[in-house]
Amino acid sequence: MAAADAIAASGLTKFYGHLRAVDHVDLRVPAGGRFGLLGPNGAGKTTMIKLLTGLSEISEGDAVVAGYDVRTDPMHVKQNVGWVASEVILDDDLSAWENLWLQAKLQRLDRWTDRAESLLAYFELGDRRKDKVGTYSTGMRKKLEIALALLHAPQIIFMDEPTIGLDAGTRRTLWDLIRGVNAEFGITVLLTTHYIEEADILCDRVAVIDHGRIVATGSPSELKAKVRTDFIEIELAPPVPEDRLRAVPGVLEAKSAGPVWTLRVESAEVVLPRLLAALSGEGIRSIRVDKPSLETVFLDLTGKRLDAEGTGPVDYRKFYAQMRRARQ
Ligand code: ATP
Image (cartoon, rainbow, N blue to C red; front, side, top):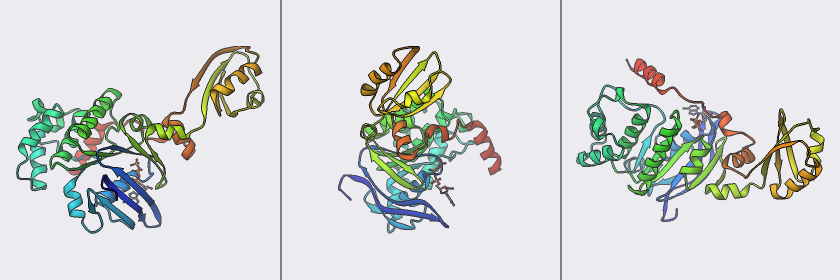
């Protein structure tokens, strides 16, 4: 483990019976960064967090988190990390302040009120501090959950799908707040997500995870640079046989939806003039070039479209109501 690593894992593996949910993962998360684990449902992201926070027993391999060995010193790991679960942890019948008080009691914190005050201010919950959490919006709940996870001043915060089910505007607000947690509070952030955009915009490093394995790691721009394909979207007025498009040198794949063709090409700059020549410029209604995105990277590495597989919007109000009923 390098001195500047917040997390260093080697050969990390978790078996659930015969299922290898996490499969010999080597991971280094530099201290002070925002690291994203990007992968589809069931890829092993949550399990990885549970292993790294000492919540689930490691089957094979080692991990050092916040300077402590997770296998031999899980208590110190837990004291130095915060965890924002993807499921509900708040008590709806208590106010924000009472939830913070409860958290302080559970963690046996002596001096917590000043930090609680500043966290409520940071997350703009100060004026609602006395209101029952049951009356909060989904975004406010998530902010409070993050505040709870930060109360004991951890070095690292783990967030499992922090913006799942939030609308686009609230998601962006949360991204800003998470950036601030990292920059202003100086806390290393490790989050899981299956939103490509979230990984791209929010994280300075990303590990793409599929079937319990890390298939690529790098900054979003490094990952994009690995993909050597562009896309050309072309709308053609008269029908064109697929063979004619595929025959253009440099075209790797051609798919159509009505009159619109999407061509995967080696290089748009090289293929575009050839394409125009092959079609003699006839019947072209529009052309658009797409450079590689993190979505392309994911498609390239795993053969899957992530957002198509990801969880759709979650109705959190329904979810919380179900949780409340289950607890009664
Ligand atoms: P999601 O985005 O849906 O939360 P994930 O990437 O976090 O997915 P995990 O929850 O880590 O994935 O699950 C990885 C695999 O391990 C899945 O096949 C899952 O069914 C399995 N798994 C997770 N927890 C358990 C458990 N307690 N017992 C048995 N299998 C489990």
